[in-house]
Length: 455
Image 1: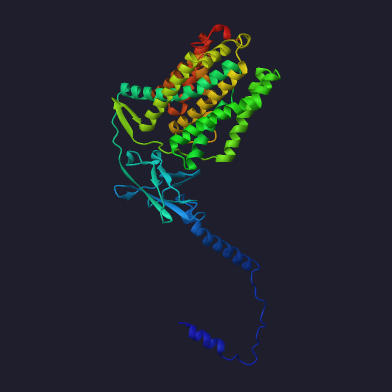
Image 2 (image 1 turned 90 degrees about the vertical axis):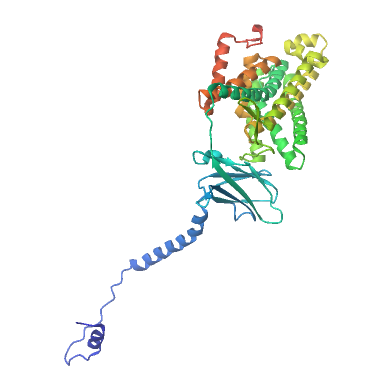
């Protein structure tokens, strides 16, 4: 048996005399060997560098290296972690989201030590599981640089409600939505009645009110005071909108069609200006969501819902009193009925128009705040999402009639919410537009409009 030692002795043994020693030939080393070494080394380095990123690239850690403060959320069910659950952190104009890893945990970096709201998206939970306790959770840092948010899940015990119970619950939700919609619709109807202008930029007036309320709250004002400031600012915005653009155009005799096209351009410009200032994320006002209280039967309303409905009713009653009992209100109705005749009767039509723009802007701003709670959330294009419904309510009730806009808004709001009993909620707005088409086919002037105003 040949061993390594015997091989070495054979190599070291002297060769016999006369034996020719072959000349050493060239080493046949492949020229690609060095290149392959470089390529393999390169990939090893890349894989090693990517290893930490892979550990953090599962979606459970967001903005951790960019910010010193971290919010750590834990999601557990029966003391076991739950993976693939979406968690959203928002506050102070900042928003980020992550998905829990196999440990049921996310870590999200935040820019400041201010309080933040941590929301668990319940639609991403496993079937039959729901959140037990508060959602969203408000977290504060204190003297530390991390803040925990612990979500505990439980069995989702769903009671099958009867059709009538679901109908009643959605009916009241529709009233809440309709009252909020009426605030914006009445303002749009008053502007159309006094000026004849179809204002597509009314959606941005709705968004403006919500954004101002958010900014005022971020500056430290209590939310109720922030809403009051937002309504006042929205009224001033309506006045300046008319003074800077529409009044000069009216004096020049610009046609209503050209002015309507300008409102579309103003809507697009305003929308993207909002995008520049607040970004494309969604911001939340304080008190969003909350526990729903049992009112009667199957009807459950949160505190925000009840405040929204009460505030909407008070404002609508105040607007009704203003239109029916005050001198300016009667003048507004006269201008909406016949602008030329009102001017010939001695009414200062321009003053009435300015007041209408202020009131229309204030109502739109308040509607935007309530819409931010109903959605929930504030976004740069939130007003456009209900613009068609606002127009539908105005046309359904009768162009230029404030009370028609109120009735049309209630009909649209109830129809939108109740229709989810038969159609998916994603397309519930289509039903309202379908009813609008049917009404226009049989009564083009709307429910309270007059036939001679059409055409």
